[in-house]
Length: 103
Length: 213
Image (cartoon, rainbow over all chains, first blue to last red):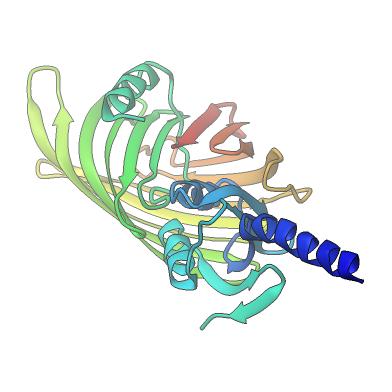
């Protein structure tokens, strides 16, 4: 049993650093994204923040997916402002599976 | 891209026969668009920098002909956009105004430009209406009206080449022998590059390009 407990604690301790550096996935529902040429600014704007590793735009689902850099984040307000600068509107934000509706 | 490269690019691009691309004079904040347009007796180059979410400043140079003579113009301009986003659609209204010069062989004369452009698009349908006038103190205004309607035969993803089939109607009353022109054309775009080409019903080639940075 003592060995079991040690293994469990060791497992938790090993996984904690991995969890701390896990990259946040943020999924945005966006209105107005009907044209890939027009939406190029979305990608450029988010990558320019220095907080985002990858941006994927799904025109079918009206979604923009962000893979954040380790230990970096963008608030919902920052995300909304970036989309507005690109000419689009934020509908909702989903972070690692948890949704938050905007406006 | 630095300003120096923008001007080098513009100089190179101005040596290429242009076309009228009626896309987006306002792109996204800190974005730059360069474009070229060619149709019969209208040759145009534009560069626009979008400095706010809704407004861009740029420079347009164009040559207009009426079948007998042609005139050259260069005008700095401001473009302002109103946009309404739907989940599956986008509606834009652009206002444009510029003040610059007509460039004659031995002199310059003041000239202005005013324009209004409205468009509506979904992933399948695109329609646009445009009205522009070149204004000069010593001449009648040169007015150009255009209407476009297009559709995309298939839906393309963000990283795919998008294809559009478009019908364009131009009305230019300053060309009394040739006021109306109808042109079917194809528009392709991929990432930040857009090209268009077509032939009017009376055999005039039309082409255009646009690059966003």
